Length: 153
Image 1 (cartoon, rainbow, N blue to C red):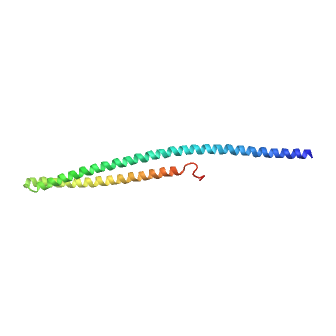
Image 2: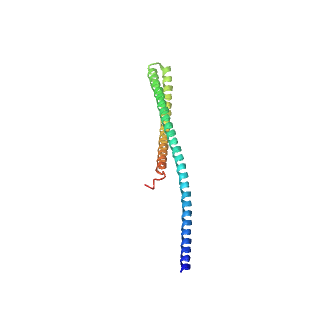
Image 3: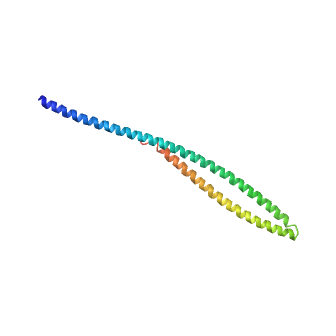
């Protein structure tokens, strides 16, 4: 009877040892997974900060581009106004001055074409910068949405 009890206790001990070893192994695996998750969280945090910095830089570039476009349009308008005044003055003079008026009109057309090209280029650049800003903001929002512990909620 004692032999059976000893055999039973040995079997139970062997089983409990296996369960303990399996639990210890699982604990090590979970610790490794937790460390990997902490590292990933750290990496994602750095990436989010990088994206926030990029978004800020794009926003600043966008604002600077708007200022440059405004200044460029202001200069173009001043040139156009000056040319219009010059054209009006040349209409009152003799035939020699009419030749100068034709040259001014041609220059005005060139400036208008250049202005239109500048405006189209500036609008395209502004649209591209706005798109990049939106992409950066979405990327930063996505990164914030992946914080560790978000699944536990």
